Amino acid sequence: MVDLLLGLQWGDEGKGKIVDVLTKDYDIIARFQGGPNAGHTLEFDGIKHVLHTIPSGIFHKNAINIVGNGVVIDPVIFKKELDNLEQFDIDITAKLLISRKAHLILPTHRLLDAASEASKGKAKIGSTLKGIGPTYMDKTGRNGMRVGDLEFDTWKEKYRALANKHQALLGFHNIDIEYDLNELENEFCEGIDALKKLKFIDSEQYIFDAMGQGKKILAEGAQGSLLDIDFGTYPYVTSSNTTAAGACTGLGVAPGKIGKVIGIFKAYATRVGSGPFPSELFDEDGKTMSRVGNEFGATTGRPRRCGWLDLVALKYAIQINGVTDLMMMKADVLSGFETIKVCTGYHYKGEEIQHLPYTIDEFAVSPVYTELPGWKKDLTQMTTSDELPPALKGYIQFLEKELKVPIKIVSVGPDRTQTIYR
Image (cartoon, rainbow, N blue to C red):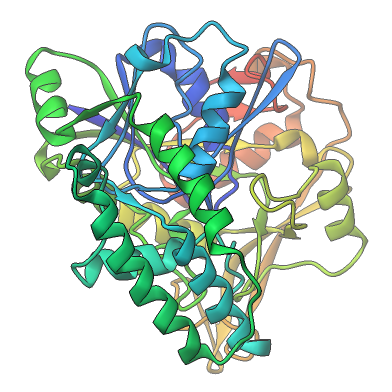
């Protein structure tokens, strides 16, 4: 069986930390979608690590890490990640395997991304400009370039044909973007050389064989369920399936082989970039969340928008993913609030609803809040569930009653040791 770990909000829930915490219980960690637009932050031994493509189990010697076929890889960023890992005692060539079916992000994909976003003006989506969307467009357009192509002598010809097509498309956007393609291609080739030092595998067969051997496998998602290309807040979404179904297509795992579905959510809500956010705060409470939670994107550094926890959206994410276990992150950030608010419904077309409608922009819905008492205690040094303040225990009980799924872990800080099991 394969267990899944997913984000249930708009990303940035803290998946990297939880994968790192859980890896001791697994033999294989497999990333199944997304690209370097995701940033997973891990902290331990006084060091902060940010990964973009490499699975978050890489720091554990017991686990093999796989970049699955559903991932898109930028060789330039991937090389930087590998370089950053050199200072640690990690046997990268033995512990990191790459699916031959994973698609490659070309330098011209990034240029197309920038031109497309610039052409939208005020209607921009909030892309990370990493070339993710154009890469997935080439994938579905059936002319993308994959890791397995690098094993053939003709890969440079394939690259050139695709890059030439992209350059022609750049003129379509009628946006003047300055770039030195020779410089970008030199970086790209250096990244390809670094990538080719790793082992390429038929990952679906590798995982199938591992299941047959009784290996414990954890599939790691990127971004969050509300950014799913089908079920997210379209068009302000990413370009892949971030939900549980994406693990099946992104790794080649049959639906019947899925075990636990672990859903990660923050004790409040955040969002990076554009798009609807019904419970967003524009007052001092929102500023406090941002400051205390250090809410800046791990990939872009952009400030995250902050708001109260939205149970309508969270229930929706639990439903479409079939979540079996919940893990709540950043409970420590809410310490100090006199009152905690939770969005338990929406005003929509003159009535109150508890489900996610077709659109949740500010003109369509407004939040309905339930208020709960806050807590003052510093949680960051607590190690057991018994130590948690009564108001936080009440908050957790309220959420479990509403969501009908148990909260197994409460995170009280960024370090892997600041994790309370319930």
